[in-house]
Amino acid sequence: MKENTKTGECNRREFLAKLSIALSGIAGALVAIPVIGSIIAPLFQKRQEVWRSVGAVESFEIGATVQVSFIDASPLLWAGITAKSAAWLRRVGEEEFIAFSVNCAHLGCPVRWIAGAKLFMCPCHGGVYYEDGSVASGPPPRGLYQYPVRANNGQVEILASPIPITTT
Image (tube, rainbow, N blue to C red; front, side):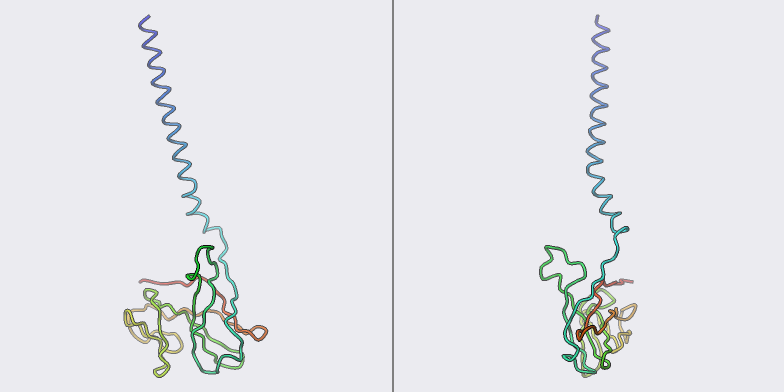
Protein backbone atom coordinates (compact mmCIF):
# COMPACT_ATOMS: atom_id res chain seq x y z
CA MET A 1 0.00 0.00 0.00
CA LYS A 2 2.93 2.33 0.59
CA GLU A 3 3.91 2.04 -3.07
CA ASN A 4 0.51 3.34 -4.19
CA THR A 5 0.83 6.35 -1.90
CA LYS A 6 4.29 7.10 -3.25
CA THR A 7 3.06 6.70 -6.79
CA GLY A 8 0.16 9.03 -6.01
CA GLU A 9 2.51 11.64 -4.56
CA CYS A 10 4.78 11.48 -7.61
CA ASN A 11 1.82 11.94 -9.90
CA ARG A 12 0.65 14.94 -7.88
CA ARG A 13 4.17 16.46 -8.01
CA GLU A 14 4.40 15.88 -11.74
CA PHE A 15 0.96 17.38 -12.22
CA LEU A 16 1.81 20.48 -10.18
CA ALA A 17 5.14 20.88 -12.01
CA LYS A 18 3.42 20.66 -15.39
CA LEU A 19 0.68 23.01 -14.21
CA SER A 20 3.20 25.61 -13.03
CA ILE A 21 5.09 25.37 -16.34
CA ALA A 22 1.84 25.82 -18.30
CA LEU A 23 0.74 28.80 -16.17
CA SER A 24 4.19 30.38 -16.54
CA GLY A 25 3.98 29.91 -20.31
CA ILE A 26 0.55 31.55 -20.43
CA ALA A 27 1.76 34.47 -18.28
CA GLY A 28 4.83 34.86 -20.51
CA ALA A 29 2.66 34.88 -23.64
CA LEU A 30 0.33 37.50 -22.12
CA VAL A 31 3.35 39.76 -21.56
CA ALA A 32 5.14 38.94 -24.84
CA ILE A 33 2.24 39.42 -27.27
CA PRO A 34 1.77 43.19 -26.66
CA VAL A 35 5.53 43.77 -26.63
CA ILE A 36 6.03 41.95 -29.94
CA GLY A 37 2.98 43.72 -31.37
CA SER A 38 4.36 47.16 -30.47
CA ILE A 39 7.65 46.29 -32.17
CA ILE A 40 6.12 44.84 -35.34
CA ALA A 41 3.13 47.19 -35.78
CA PRO A 42 5.11 50.20 -37.10
CA LEU A 43 6.43 48.03 -39.93
CA PHE A 44 2.90 47.62 -41.29
CA GLN A 45 1.57 51.13 -40.63
CA LYS A 46 1.65 53.69 -43.42
CA ARG A 47 3.53 56.88 -42.56
CA GLN A 48 0.98 59.60 -41.97
CA GLU A 49 1.53 62.74 -44.02
CA VAL A 50 -0.72 65.76 -43.67
CA TRP A 51 -0.66 69.14 -45.41
CA ARG A 52 -0.84 71.85 -42.72
CA SER A 53 -1.71 75.46 -43.48
CA VAL A 54 0.75 78.00 -42.06
CA GLY A 55 -0.80 81.23 -43.38
CA ALA A 56 -2.03 83.18 -46.36
CA VAL A 57 0.31 83.55 -49.36
CA GLU A 58 0.10 87.36 -49.26
CA SER A 59 1.20 87.46 -45.60
CA PHE A 60 4.73 86.36 -46.54
CA GLU A 61 7.19 88.86 -48.03
CA ILE A 62 9.26 87.70 -51.02
CA GLY A 63 12.83 86.98 -49.91
CA ALA A 64 12.04 87.00 -46.18
CA THR A 65 12.63 83.96 -43.95
CA VAL A 66 10.19 83.58 -41.06
CA GLN A 67 9.40 80.92 -38.52
CA VAL A 68 5.96 79.30 -38.84
CA SER A 69 4.19 76.85 -36.53
CA PHE A 70 1.97 73.89 -37.34
CA ILE A 71 0.59 70.77 -35.67
CA ASP A 72 2.64 67.59 -36.07
CA ALA A 73 1.45 64.99 -38.60
CA SER A 74 0.50 62.41 -36.00
CA PRO A 75 -0.13 64.11 -32.67
CA LEU A 76 -1.00 61.85 -29.78
CA LEU A 77 -4.14 62.66 -27.80
CA TRP A 78 -2.11 63.57 -24.70
CA ALA A 79 0.65 65.48 -26.57
CA GLY A 80 -0.70 68.94 -25.75
CA ILE A 81 1.73 71.73 -26.65
CA THR A 82 4.38 69.21 -27.70
CA ALA A 83 2.30 68.40 -30.80
CA LYS A 84 3.32 71.82 -32.18
CA SER A 85 6.17 71.85 -34.64
CA ALA A 86 7.83 74.65 -36.58
CA ALA A 87 9.71 75.40 -39.77
CA TRP A 88 11.69 78.22 -41.31
CA LEU A 89 9.69 79.40 -44.35
CA ARG A 90 11.07 81.59 -47.14
CA ARG A 91 9.01 83.01 -49.97
CA VAL A 92 11.14 82.74 -53.11
CA GLY A 93 8.64 83.90 -55.72
CA GLU A 94 4.96 84.68 -56.23
CA GLU A 95 3.87 81.06 -55.61
CA GLU A 96 7.21 79.46 -54.68
CA PHE A 97 8.26 78.72 -51.10
CA ILE A 98 11.04 76.80 -49.33
CA ALA A 99 10.65 75.39 -45.82
CA PHE A 100 13.43 74.05 -43.59
CA SER A 101 13.19 72.17 -40.33
CA VAL A 102 14.02 74.16 -37.20
CA ASN A 103 16.00 71.13 -35.99
CA CYS A 104 19.76 70.80 -36.55
CA ALA A 105 20.74 67.70 -38.51
CA HIS A 106 23.44 66.95 -35.91
CA LEU A 107 21.47 66.29 -32.70
CA GLY A 108 18.12 67.99 -33.30
CA CYS A 109 18.82 71.25 -31.45
CA PRO A 110 16.78 74.27 -32.65
CA VAL A 111 18.50 76.41 -35.28
CA ARG A 112 18.10 80.19 -35.57
CA TRP A 113 17.92 82.29 -38.69
CA ILE A 114 20.39 85.18 -38.64
CA ALA A 115 18.99 87.52 -41.30
CA GLY A 116 22.02 89.84 -41.46
CA ALA A 117 24.42 86.97 -42.15
CA LYS A 118 21.87 84.94 -44.15
CA LEU A 119 22.78 81.84 -42.13
CA PHE A 120 21.02 79.29 -39.97
CA MET A 121 22.99 78.73 -36.76
CA CYS A 122 22.79 76.04 -34.09
CA PRO A 123 23.82 77.59 -30.76
CA CYS A 124 24.42 74.23 -29.05
CA HIS A 125 27.22 72.65 -31.06
CA GLY A 126 28.23 75.34 -33.55
CA GLY A 127 26.47 74.00 -36.62
CA VAL A 128 26.10 76.60 -39.37
CA TYR A 129 23.98 76.29 -42.52
CA TYR A 130 23.78 78.49 -45.62
CA GLU A 131 20.45 80.02 -46.60
CA ASP A 132 19.80 77.07 -48.94
CA GLY A 133 20.04 74.69 -45.94
CA SER A 134 23.40 73.15 -46.88
CA VAL A 135 26.12 72.78 -44.23
CA ALA A 136 28.52 75.73 -43.93
CA SER A 137 30.53 74.47 -40.94
CA GLY A 138 30.39 72.49 -37.74
CA PRO A 139 29.44 68.92 -36.91
CA PRO A 140 26.17 68.42 -38.88
CA PRO A 141 26.56 65.45 -41.27
CA ARG A 142 24.12 66.89 -43.83
CA GLY A 143 21.99 69.94 -44.55
CA LEU A 144 18.73 70.93 -42.91
CA TYR A 145 15.73 68.75 -43.64
CA GLN A 146 13.54 70.44 -46.24
CA TYR A 147 9.74 70.17 -46.04
CA PRO A 148 7.64 69.99 -49.20
CA VAL A 149 5.67 73.26 -49.51
CA ARG A 150 2.81 74.34 -51.77
CA ALA A 151 0.50 77.27 -52.30
CA ASN A 152 -3.07 75.98 -52.33
CA ASN A 153 -6.20 78.18 -52.57
CA GLY A 154 -4.32 81.24 -51.30
CA GLN A 155 -2.81 79.35 -48.34
CA VAL A 156 0.77 78.18 -47.84
CA GLU A 157 0.81 74.53 -46.79
CA ILE A 158 3.65 72.39 -45.44
CA LEU A 159 3.63 68.62 -45.73
CA ALA A 160 4.00 67.64 -42.08
CA SER A 161 5.93 64.41 -41.71
CA PRO A 162 8.41 62.93 -39.24
CA ILE A 163 11.82 64.61 -39.36
CA PRO A 164 14.86 62.36 -39.80
CA ILE A 165 17.60 63.25 -37.30
CA THR A 166 21.05 61.77 -37.92
CA THR A 167 23.56 61.42 -35.08
CA THR A 168 26.50 60.14 -37.13
